[in-house]
Length: 131
Image (cartoon, rainbow, N blue to C red; front, top):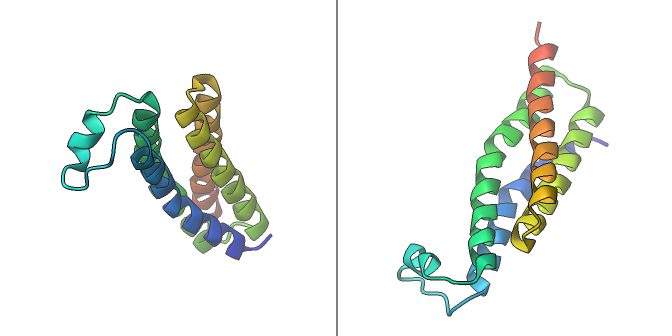
Protein backbone atom coordinates (compact mmCIF):
# COMPACT_ATOMS: atom_id res chain seq x y z
CA UNK A 1 0.00 0.00 0.00
CA UNK A 2 1.16 3.52 -0.69
CA UNK A 3 0.72 6.87 0.95
CA UNK A 4 -1.99 7.64 -1.62
CA UNK A 5 -4.17 5.02 0.09
CA UNK A 6 -3.70 6.80 3.41
CA UNK A 7 -4.51 10.17 1.86
CA UNK A 8 -7.68 8.73 0.34
CA UNK A 9 -8.55 7.46 3.81
CA UNK A 10 -8.21 11.03 5.11
CA UNK A 11 -10.67 12.09 2.41
CA UNK A 12 -13.13 9.33 3.39
CA UNK A 13 -12.79 10.20 7.08
CA UNK A 14 -13.47 13.86 6.26
CA UNK A 15 -16.67 12.98 4.41
CA UNK A 16 -17.87 10.33 6.87
CA UNK A 17 -19.49 12.75 9.36
CA UNK A 18 -21.77 13.97 6.59
CA UNK A 19 -23.01 10.43 5.97
CA UNK A 20 -24.30 10.34 9.54
CA UNK A 21 -25.72 13.87 9.15
CA UNK A 22 -27.73 12.85 6.09
CA UNK A 23 -28.92 9.72 7.87
CA UNK A 24 -30.05 11.75 10.88
CA UNK A 25 -31.96 14.20 8.71
CA UNK A 26 -33.51 11.50 6.54
CA UNK A 27 -35.30 9.92 9.51
CA UNK A 28 -38.01 11.27 11.76
CA UNK A 29 -40.30 14.15 10.94
CA UNK A 30 -39.82 16.23 7.82
CA UNK A 31 -36.49 18.04 8.16
CA UNK A 32 -36.71 21.79 8.92
CA UNK A 33 -33.72 23.57 7.42
CA UNK A 34 -34.76 26.88 8.99
CA UNK A 35 -34.10 25.49 12.48
CA UNK A 36 -31.88 22.40 12.19
CA UNK A 37 -30.87 22.22 15.84
CA UNK A 38 -34.40 22.81 17.05
CA UNK A 39 -35.63 20.15 14.62
CA UNK A 40 -33.10 17.71 16.02
CA UNK A 41 -34.12 18.48 19.60
CA UNK A 42 -37.78 17.71 18.76
CA UNK A 43 -37.11 14.26 17.28
CA UNK A 44 -38.42 11.27 19.17
CA UNK A 45 -36.72 8.57 17.07
CA UNK A 46 -33.60 7.51 19.01
CA UNK A 47 -31.84 6.62 15.74
CA UNK A 48 -31.95 10.30 14.77
CA UNK A 49 -30.19 11.27 17.99
CA UNK A 50 -27.69 8.45 17.62
CA UNK A 51 -26.95 9.39 13.99
CA UNK A 52 -26.33 12.96 15.12
CA UNK A 53 -24.07 11.70 17.91
CA UNK A 54 -22.17 9.56 15.38
CA UNK A 55 -21.75 12.68 13.24
CA UNK A 56 -20.35 14.69 16.14
CA UNK A 57 -18.04 11.87 17.18
CA UNK A 58 -16.75 11.49 13.61
CA UNK A 59 -15.95 15.21 13.51
CA UNK A 60 -14.13 14.88 16.85
CA UNK A 61 -12.04 11.91 15.70
CA UNK A 62 -10.99 13.42 12.38
CA UNK A 63 -8.35 16.02 13.37
CA UNK A 64 -6.07 13.62 15.26
CA UNK A 65 -6.32 11.07 12.47
CA UNK A 66 -5.61 13.54 9.66
CA UNK A 67 -2.72 15.06 11.60
CA UNK A 68 -1.38 11.58 12.31
CA UNK A 69 -1.36 10.62 8.63
CA UNK A 70 0.30 13.85 7.52
CA UNK A 71 2.84 13.94 10.35
CA UNK A 72 3.74 10.27 9.89
CA UNK A 73 4.28 10.90 6.18
CA UNK A 74 6.43 13.98 6.83
CA UNK A 75 8.43 12.11 9.48
CA UNK A 76 9.22 9.32 7.03
CA UNK A 77 7.23 6.50 8.62
CA UNK A 78 7.01 3.56 6.22
CA UNK A 79 4.14 4.18 3.78
CA UNK A 80 2.68 0.70 4.16
CA UNK A 81 2.40 1.15 7.93
CA UNK A 82 0.69 4.54 7.52
CA UNK A 83 -1.68 3.13 4.93
CA UNK A 84 -2.56 0.09 7.04
CA UNK A 85 -3.31 2.20 10.11
CA UNK A 86 -5.35 4.60 7.96
CA UNK A 87 -7.43 1.83 6.40
CA UNK A 88 -8.09 0.21 9.77
CA UNK A 89 -9.06 3.63 11.19
CA UNK A 90 -11.58 4.26 8.40
CA UNK A 91 -13.10 0.79 8.67
CA UNK A 92 -13.35 1.16 12.46
CA UNK A 93 -14.98 4.58 12.12
CA UNK A 94 -17.49 3.31 9.57
CA UNK A 95 -18.40 0.46 11.88
CA UNK A 96 -18.55 2.91 14.78
CA UNK A 97 -21.25 4.90 13.01
CA UNK A 98 -23.20 1.80 12.02
CA UNK A 99 -23.07 0.48 15.58
CA UNK A 100 -23.95 3.93 16.97
CA UNK A 101 -27.02 4.35 14.79
CA UNK A 102 -27.99 0.72 15.32
CA UNK A 103 -27.81 1.03 19.11
CA UNK A 104 -25.07 -1.56 19.71
CA UNK A 105 -23.05 0.14 22.47
CA UNK A 106 -20.38 -2.49 23.19
CA UNK A 107 -19.47 -2.90 19.51
CA UNK A 108 -19.60 0.88 19.11
CA UNK A 109 -17.14 1.36 21.96
CA UNK A 110 -14.79 -1.32 20.65
CA UNK A 111 -14.76 0.20 17.16
CA UNK A 112 -14.14 3.62 18.72
CA UNK A 113 -11.18 2.15 20.61
CA UNK A 114 -9.69 0.61 17.46
CA UNK A 115 -9.95 3.96 15.66
CA UNK A 116 -8.43 5.78 18.61
CA UNK A 117 -5.52 3.35 18.76
CA UNK A 118 -4.88 3.82 15.04
CA UNK A 119 -4.85 7.62 15.31
CA UNK A 120 -2.64 7.48 18.40
CA UNK A 121 -0.29 5.02 16.71
CA UNK A 122 0.07 7.32 13.69
CA UNK A 123 0.96 10.24 15.95
CA UNK A 124 3.34 8.14 18.04
CA UNK A 125 5.02 6.71 14.94
CA UNK A 126 5.59 10.25 13.67
CA UNK A 127 7.04 11.36 16.99
CA UNK A 128 9.37 8.36 17.18
CA UNK A 129 10.56 8.80 13.60
CA UNK A 130 11.85 12.33 14.23
CA UNK A 131 15.40 12.50 15.56
